[in-house]
Length: 81
Image (cartoon, rainbow, N blue to C red; front, side, top):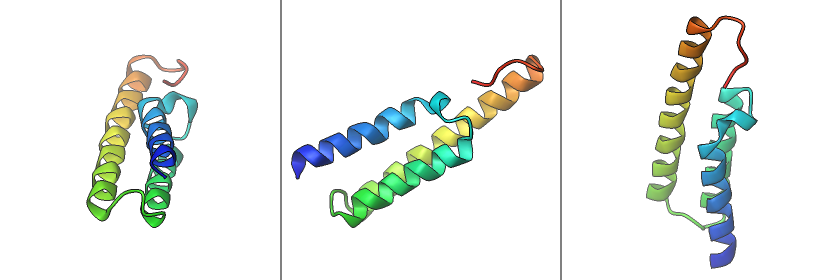
């Protein structure tokens, strides 16, 4: 199970670090939350680790949303990040 845990957590972190593959930031955040819930339900992470991952996802969501809004205001009509 340790290898599986590492793979799932690596996938979670890879998704966290690259929201550009998901044009809908809210869907991206919800996917991270869903992956977190799946790892917790499988017993791969405890409640505190799940809380931390959700906090990271929410903070990253806020950061990338602000970045996207700033970019749209500075460069109207330009492709999204």
